[in-house]
Amino acid sequence: MDRRPKQTDEIKEWLTTRPDIIRKIADQIPPLGVYELVTDVRPEESYYRLISYAEDGTVTMARFIRETLRYVYSVFGLDPNDLKLVGETDPVTGRVEFYETSNAGS
Image (cartoon, rainbow, N blue to C red; front, side, top):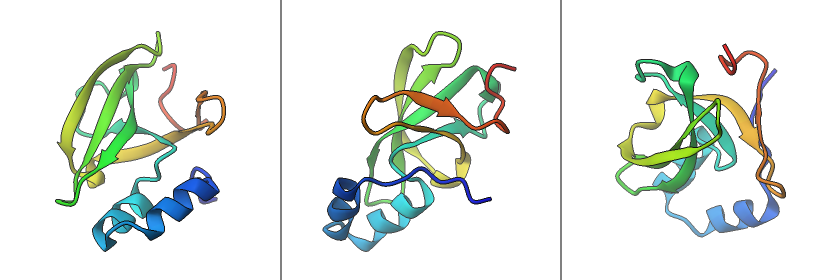
């Protein structure tokens, strides 16, 4: 089963106006996804949400603590290949839902 966050019509429309590199990254890292950083020492303790795509092929992500859902800091220049999709964000409520196969809560 391909688990990918749904894209809103607004996101789809916005992506049509972006450069090819941004559309390519957005296909790999959907904007409403919730991610683990695979190079993190303890990926089960935090999760990441997209802030922006960069034309150099990297992304900027916001890091949150899973236990408290508290924002910690932003990380710039991440390689999309270092991120693993583990959940999604509801586009209306902003609520984060982790997929059962993630390390959430372990």
